[in-house]
Amino acid sequence: MTRDSTVHKLLELIDEATMVLHAALHVGNPAPIVEHLCRAHDHPRPGDMVIEISSCHNRGHTRMSRIGTLLKVETTRRGTTYTLLRLDGKKQRWTNARFVRVFERNGLRDIDERLMTERRPNDPTS
Image (cartoon, rainbow, N blue to C red; front, side):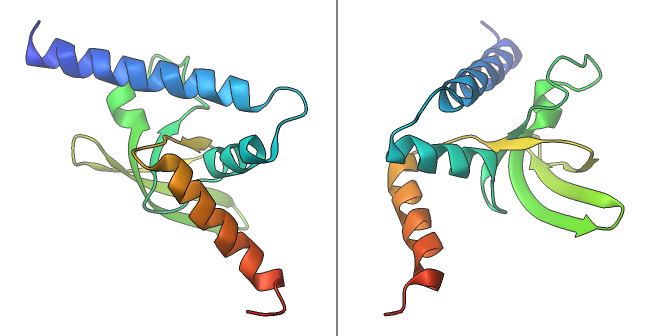
């Protein structure tokens, strides 16, 4: 297996695993941890590894152009623009797109930290 075919296969696995997780997180009456996973998955923040899912069946976008680190989210009256640092090191701007988080190592611990951050503004003791 060549390096390029290995990279292509790994990107395919990331893409497929993320889409399976996306489907699984949106089923039924979820347990609290699943709700937190779903929220973190559906609302990535700058710095998160993400994959663009709104054009996953569009042959014009390769997996390499759809996976990377979310750098910035800008919302204006014209819409939302996402800036992505792709895995190949190129920056790409997206509009009219939807991104979900790709969980990396320590994903559950990070979810716990996000949950605590989300709770703090409403906590009268903080």
